[in-house]
Length: 352
Image 1: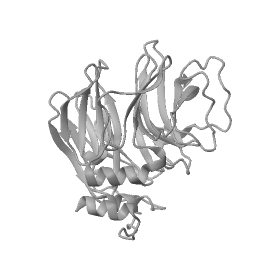
Image 2 (image 1 turned 180 degrees about the vertical axis):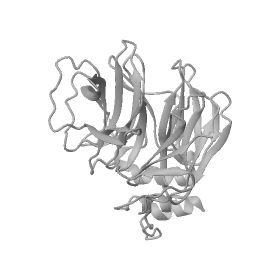
Image 3 (image 1 turned 45 degrees about the horizontal axis):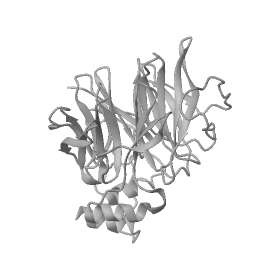
Image 4 (image 1 turned 60 degrees about the vertical axis):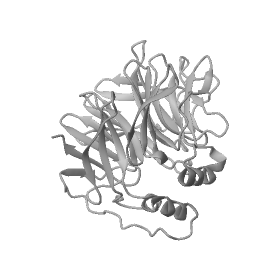
């Protein structure tokens, strides 16, 4: 039935009705929303603040930005794009031939924050604005504030359609390739009907550029994380309802967990992986993208995984108010902060 609904939606035959958005911003179900955002699809913890990727659209038709959110004070500050940008002479990161992004078209998606082996703090951002690229930023402390200095980029290969990125400490990265850019509809239909692979993971480094990672093929690769020693990748296969643990040395999937439509994935402080899982179908997912105000009530779960044996435990589930459609969960103090692909809010909830 889930596949039938999905095919119906993808063929655009009118089977999905516009959802009723959640317009109120009151706490409920233990969650407290902050309704001053726009599609806060991904987040990363920076000390006592959060870096938030406010997504425009996956096709780059709508722009977005990276903001700094201070939960203690409530302050929100746009870090990128600035009103103007000076290209640094010592940009030094990424592909030296890659030009700066278009500030008006900049359209972020997945992000990752990593301390490089040289000690500098690097933020990687998937950008859909006029190109498929991964943008490199250095996170700088300026007095009591924070700034993002653009240090370079890597433009994707032909047919690139990126989703999420995870940094390597040597300055490279891994990024999920969802599907071929010019045949998205057919790739999705094949995945839904026959379980066909639509994409894979790219590895990038300055010496070799982009190259597919052996063993990473799957139906709609979405969120991605790495082990602390960078020997394994954890890849969310959205259309396979699976999180896979890939041994980079052998190119073999050594363990997997069944998780409904897994989106982004983050590490918790106690060493578990937190996966945002979508529990409603493609009909509701597609309808959520038409919301113009408020938040979508799309059902979700936050699933904690043991990275060793990939055993799973649902730690949070919700549908409806105060927020649905969670795409990411990050630990911050004694709370979880949840972002979404469709809506005006971030929600926070105490960790029990």
